[in-house]
Amino acid sequence: MAKKPKFQTPTGMHDILPEDQRYFQKIQNTCEDIANFYGFQKIETPILEEAELFSRGLGLATDVVQKQMFSFRTKGGDYLTLRPEQTASIARAYIEQGMQNLPQPVKFWHLGPFFRYEHPQSGRFRQFWQFGFEVLGEENSVLDAQIIQIFYNILRELKLKNLIIEVNSIGDSQCRPYYKKLLASYFKSREAALCSDCRRRLRENPLRILDCKEEKCQPVKAQAPQILDHLCETCHKHFREVLEFLDELELPYHLNPYLVRGLDYYTKTVFEIIEDSPDGKTLGTLAGGGRYDTLVKILGGKETPAVGGAGGMERIIQLMKTKAVRFPRERKVEVFLAQLGDLAKRKSLKLIEDFREAQILVGESLGRDSLKAQLKMADRIGARYSLILGQKEALEGTIIIRDMVSGRQEIVKLDKVVKETAKRLKK
Image (cartoon, rainbow, N blue to C red):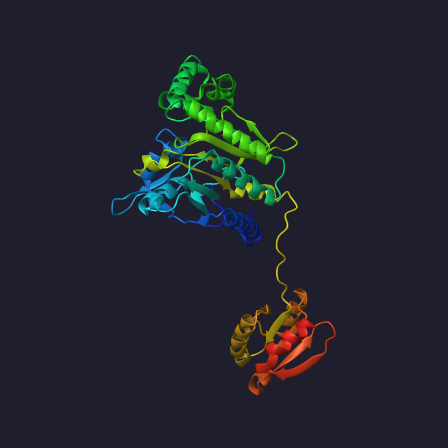
């Protein structure tokens, strides 16, 4: 049995190896193209924020705040948290940087790592990557539909199919309190049938019960009152408009009256996008979000309507690996530089830079001295030409160009080799 290495990645965290980097890059490039088209600007916020930003913004009764945050006190006494999500950080930046004074709305996109202490499972890690899009300073329902469209477009661009958008409205401060009372009354009479977490949620925020994934709670949840029957006129109108826009866009959605998302800052529209596989199994939510009209005010800013969402990159990549995803063709290395001796090594370093400036990819193995091994490597990578620089050539200011197909060789001046090679590559 192989001995375990002394140091390993912490539980729930993972290395992103070179073979997976192309998937991350593909997602980033797709997000960037979409962002440029729809007029979103990139924003980056610190990985560490004050813990209170999330406890106040996300809600004290949420699982993220109660169970999943990586928080610690610094030597200076600051209580900080590794960010579990991005929206609260963007709302903080919006307030702190005075963005309410800019022409509204402001539109941001972001991509980076986030941290939650939870049970690692398929496509879910304790350090995970997300991309997201946020619009602050606009209450019109058309923005809700456009945000949903953007996430749907990105997933389609990444070749994911059978996508279903689940959508709901969770009302606002006018209609939600009455609905929460109805829910509390319903669940109290069935408290014994709930899991221990949901019994706690019943006391703190009965809406959170609708977000429970425990099998035990599903039958009770399925019979609960639906918020769509209790929306105020404003929320009802807003949600109707969102659905009309989705119909106009011909997006495949279905109403999920028990969709609430896991964070307290949401108001009105909430959505999730899943892949509906033929066998009925799903990897879970690929992207999700909604409207958060009260978050900026909760964090000390002016009342600011906002809407946004995020997509989980590891889970999306897991699905991408099952699809025929096309990646940009990598530039082929057509020239290999073989060198022999210390003087040739020194000259090679400058020569490689000359080729870089001419935008010609050059393969090399500077650490090796065996010409046979270097030419074998040139052959393996499919180089058309090998440049051979030995001690004699280095002293004379020359270099050998070898055609790897015909085997023909020609000596040229070292200071002319870049131009000469470029000419040959064009033929």
